[in-house]
Image 1 (tube, one colour):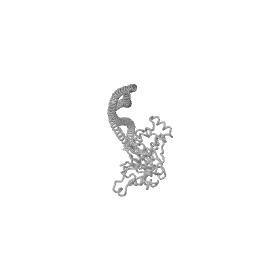
Image 2 (cartoon, helix red, strand yellow):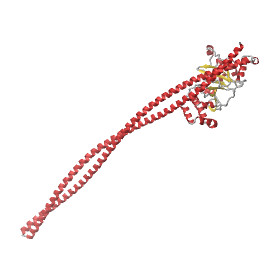
Image 3 (cartoon, helix red, strand yellow):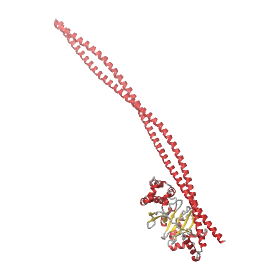
Image 4 (cartoon, helix red, strand yellow):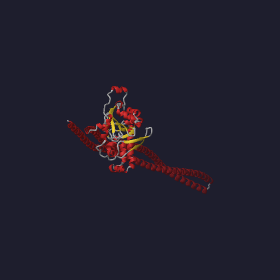
Length: 526
C-alpha cells in the first residue's frame, strides 16, 4: 500500500490536492490521468466532481468499495505537501503537463513527466533498480557537471567535505539506496537545492536528457493576504456560494485556523514519522557497526593464526633450505673425491701401461740374448772342434755377455711385475672407491631432490598463507572503513534527529496555536 497525493497548481499559485492510500493501481492512475485528464478543462472537471473517487478503479470496484471521501486541501507549494509519509505525488503543473514526483523516505525528490513513468514503470518503486540508477545519475550530475558550474556550491563542498567529492561518489555507488544514503549523510547538499528537482525528456518522453537544478532562494515570510485567502475564495466558489457574501472575518479566520490546523497536523505527523524512520536507521547503523566490529575481531583472530602458521612455515622453509645446502655440500664433496679417485685411476692405468711396455721390451731383450747365446754356443763348439782358441775365447765372452743380459733383464722384469701388481691394486681400489662415491652421490642427489620438493611445498604453503594474511589485513582495513562509515551514519542521523525534534517542537507550537485560536472563536460565539 502506497500513500499518494493527486494535486494541481491553480492560477493563483496555490496547490490543491487530495490524498489517499492506493494498492497496486499507481500505474493505472498514471495511465488514466494521461488518457482522460490531459487538458485544463478535463483537469478542472476531475477536481470539481466525483471523478477523483473513481480514479484508478474499475466500475465494479467503484460500486463495491467505499468511495474515497477525503476532502480537497490546499497548500502554498507542491514541496510542502510532500511529507515524510507521502510516497508519490501526481501533479498537474501550470504548464498543463502531468508530472510524477518521487518522494519516499528521502529528501532527494525528483519530478518527471508522467509519460516517462509509463515508459519506465519501475521508477515508481522506491527500492527498484530503475529508481537507484536515476538517483545515481542525479547525484553524479550534482557532484560532477553542476559542481563545476556553481562556484558557491563548489565552495560549500570544499568547506564541508574536505575528503573530496570522489569519496561521496564511491559511497553512493556502494549504497543499497543511494537517495536515502545521500539524504541522511549529506543533508547540507540536499538543502542547498530547490525541491523537487525536475528532469527534461525527449519529445516522446522515453529518455531523460538533463536535470534542471535550481539553487534554493531565501523565502520571505508570508503576508496576511496569503494563500489562505485564495483557498478560501476557491472553496466558496466550489460550494456555489457568493464569495463576496462569505468574507466575514470570523468565517475567514475559522477557515485559516482549519488550514493551519491541518497543515500543522500534517507537518507534525510527517516529522514524527521521519523521526521514527531515523531512529530505525540509527538502530540499523548500530547493528551494522556491531556486526562489523565482530567481523573485524574474527578477521584479527584469523590474521593472528595465519601469522603464527607463517612463522612455523618460515622455520620449516629455513630447515628445508639448510637440508638442501647440506646435501648439496655432500654432493660437491663427493664429486671432488670422485675426481681425485679418477685422477689416481688415470695415473695408475698410465703407469701400468708403461710398466707392461717396459716388461715387453725386457722380455724381447731376453729373447735376443738367448738367441745370441745359442749362436755363441754353436761358435764355441765349432771353435773347439777346429782348435781355434781365439774363437773359443770369443765365443765364451759372447755367451757370458748374453747370460749377464738375460740375468739383468729377468731382474728388471721381476721389478716390473711388482710394479704392475701395485698398479693393478691401485686400479681395483680406485674403481671400488669410484663406485662407492657414485652410490653416495646418488643418495645425496636424491636427498637434494626431496629437499627441493619439500621447499617447493613449503614455499607454496607459505605463499598461500601470505595471501590469506593479505586478505585478512584487507578485510580489517575494509571493516575499519565500514565502522567509520557507520559512525558517520549514526552521527549524521543524530544531527538529523535534532533538526526533526526542532520541527516537531515548531509543529506542536503551530498546532497548539491553531487549537487556541479555535477555542477563542468558539468562546467568542458563546
